[in-house]
Length: 112
Length: 117
Image (cartoon, rainbow over all chains, first blue to last red; front, top):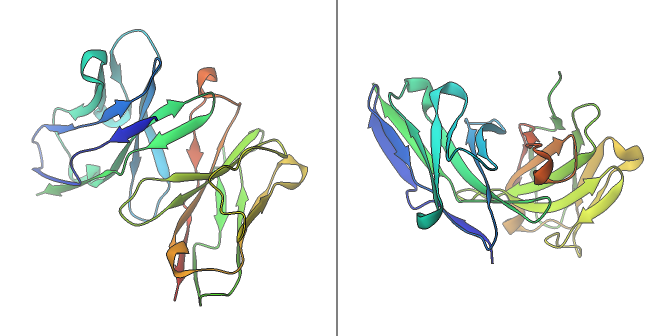
């Protein structure tokens, strides 16, 4: 069955430090992969997506993610975190023609 | 463009009562989703509509949950009777077309937070 694992429930980084959020997926075919961000009291906003082609994808707000088929991973990175990046981040995999399966999320805390 | 609108933002009810949530998707979006997000978990799909037809409701607890999308625009999700474990945020999302393959991401509303006491 398709699944998404985000091993880190909480991550704390200092402002200006680099960030990497982990995502591992289980999917039998070519995956369609997404990262969404959710600020408190808000819905989810798409950061970036991978469908095919270049395995390093750029997103909004300075985020990027790298698809590694051999590791079944799609980790999210940002070289320098800003206080406004504090939020919850969800990795998702596209299942079938329309179903998205979300991970359990990683809550990011940014220290001033 | 206006985003996905949901109401109410918050709702507190007692168990065994009924509740309804409303969603207005982005204009022109054919596909509408209802997700349940329990605290500490990722969103879980409850039901997906394509226009006014149901595409997937395999994870909808049909003994207590119902949803409709009249005229292929607005949608209502109802719970009757509510249980304590229904406490969650209910998210509505829409996308222009069916299918991830069509490169159409989800646009989410801000959700309705339901507390069942």
